[in-house]
Image 1 (spheres, rainbow, N blue to C red):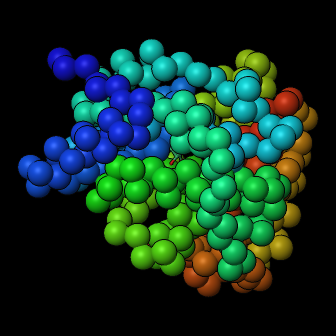
Image 2: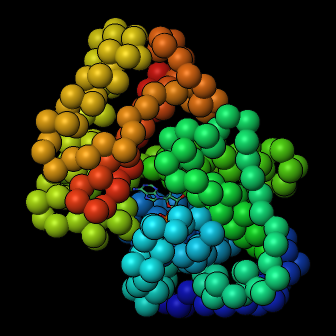
Image 3: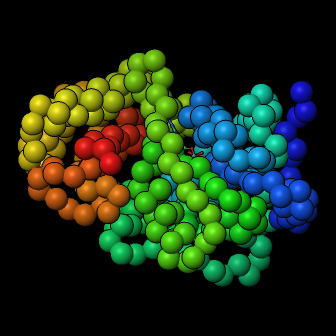
Length: 286
Ligand code: AMP
């Protein structure tokens, strides 16, 4: 099996892309911060199904972390990541240094407004989506990808990315891939590594309670306040949980609603110990 090709500079990626384009091959991009798990691998598989060449990126992007967040502690497991990328058949991995993407003098950032970044993780993590939008724009430009793949796990991120891709007339398709969970329902996340066994058990409350309110909605409950209250009550019943937010918005518009008559995003962010986890469901499907 050919090992995944490791590219560390923008110039090397451009050379690789130039060769692929000369052969008229389509390029799929899967941006990640590494510490790869089966959620990431599902994105890679989806990219392989729909594109000729797949480029993954592994880059812990400093501009999307707040000053008191876990940039330094974020797990970095590049050797293991490469083995997984090789096994799934990804062609190349872009693994730049921070200086490669943000050289001295770097001054340009993408900010997305329009009422989609002032809520959920955007409200709780100021500057986060500015960092995400900036690095994803750079990765799209560097790889000239035809298609990029993102997880529903970060549903607001998908909304933000689709917005700037449309607003800036970028020539790329964005595909959202469903959330991959472990056998107990816990949404896979690189941050699950931070959890103690007890915290991990407690964290199952997230998928359990999201599923319960989905059933409530399927049974005919339409009132957002009632559903939100039920969700909060269920999560609070787990003593180790500390709610950051529990929100329901129309999807993909992220508008406030009081009755569920259209597809909605039900999203939660909850701390277990020092680890902040997010999870969501989209119901009323489109
Ligand atoms: P990250 O490395 O956490 O920045 O994630 C990279 C990409 O993988 C993002 O598009 C995430 O939404 C996606 N992702 C992370 N966890 C999951 C999961 N459990 N299921 C599906 N996609 C995921």
